[in-house]
Image (cartoon, rainbow, N blue to C red; front, side, top):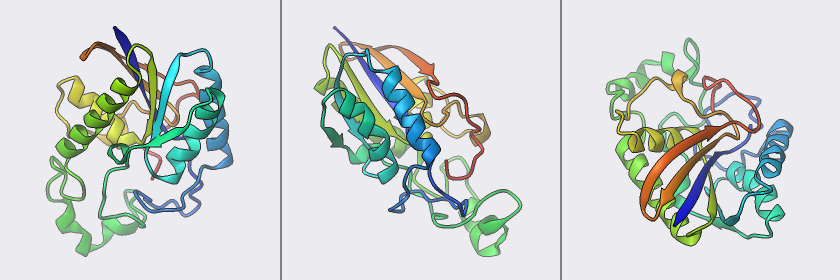
Length: 208
């Protein structure tokens, strides 16, 4: 029995201060992000969606809304899909400016392989995989859509592809409002399909 679980990254966020917002509340979609969510809703209009679930963060819930509405589904919430924890939340962290230039931040940068500045990659992968299988069970034989965030989705993908979890963030293939679709036969993962219904965006954009 084939089941597809689509991992959708949320749309662009209104973030004029260019901070790393992480799990902070009240970060909504920008106007562009709202359009991206509508574009994805149109792209999956013909899909057999049985279950829509999102991270509890506002930007994920807003991205899920037009998709769930088009399929007359309620939006479930799963904490396992939340953004990764990060000690630099609320600060500017672009290279060459902001928090990373301050000596008090340097102890958090000593181990990029774990990483030392936030939630361990392996813990992200495990909680995301749990969310995927919960969604797969809910949509067995049909399709589910999970709205999450760039780092958790990319970490999950690397875990499933048996690649090392630490990586260069500039090389992530996970644009805003992109779909990383996991195709299952029963509990077995058959393939991973990546698509960008709302177009390609720069993975280096702060806080995106």
